Image 1: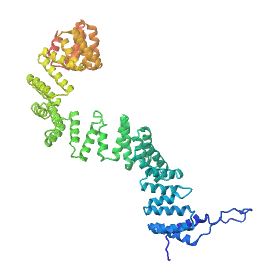
Image 2: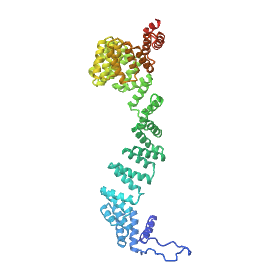
Image 3: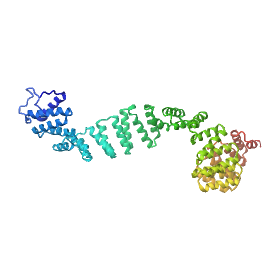
Image 4: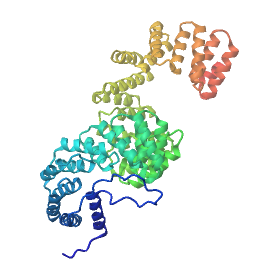
Length: 537
């Protein structure tokens, strides 16, 4: 038969010669190097031409994918060399090519001792037959004898990952990273360690990955690190890694959106605006991003810009209550009260259980000096708002409104009703206590109310002022002055606190000090006629 052998085939033939005979002979040495005693060389095996011919044919046919004919040739070669491990393993492999895994297993099991390649034939055959336990046992035997077989570690890692055996998957990936220390190997190892909750180990793996490759191809590792640091409440390192990821992935919406949440409005207003605009350019249909931009403008008092954003949003969806809220708030600040009233009226109609609509509509009526409409708005809101905290906010606003318009008994009644529902409502405790103290009524009760408010919020300057004022009304001038000066350290720009200090100094007979603080109070409140009269005296 005329055969043309490929280069690989020739190598296979040479390999066969080595397999059958061992090394072909010693290197010829110089005369001085030759030992004086004869060498015990391994017994040579004569190569049977027919067996050799079957093996060569099988090797070529196997390389061509002709597994059936290769299988037959290996079988015939085995008849001449039944103890050859290499021929029997090759014979078993052709059964795998024929999808006859039972025969592949049967032939591979005849091999003793089993090397890594034999165990690999068994492992792949078991795997093909869905005999997972046997397959994994054989795969483990492969890496037990060949610790560098990375493909087997990958197969094991995949299986352990599928059954959520994370510790075993981590073991496999540690070997992968050791054999092939690539950025991807360390990144995948970090992912598994993160899932298992081994965050310190994961950070080390991700850092190693980035030390190998910190380019765009490995940008997701920065994101993974950021998420770990976020779970650890380390905002500095979270921000640092998100920023690095964003530089490598400038169009990744998830990364940019995550990064945006870590900018502080009081420190990075321009960055926030620019980043939000970039996100909007990437996802122009996302109204939430536009809404966020409008909120940023609102917080920065850029009312015209904020107004333009929310006006456009309402043009597309006139029933969005968040847009109505901000449009209404902007209108209040711009003193467009009729427009604000329209927005908040629509908001209460669309979402009558949302307290902010009622509170702001009532506020608009207060700005218009429409006392009856303000009170009626809060009362109506109480019929619809069911959330206990929200209804308390409405009840508080209603009580304040009654007090402002001279309905003192009704105000006291509502504040006490509120405090029965929420005994630790600090603003109500302070407001009721101050209101009674200012009128000189039930002073001991008023003092206890304000003391409780201060216990809840010890550093509240307004509460300190109320406490100093009730002490003043009780004639305890020294204690009152001490408390009011403490309040002044917190809120030195409040004309009421400053005026109170002047009144205490005056009560103590120190008119000069009193005039100093009254003058400061008048500077803060130039239209206050009562202060002007005090200074004339």
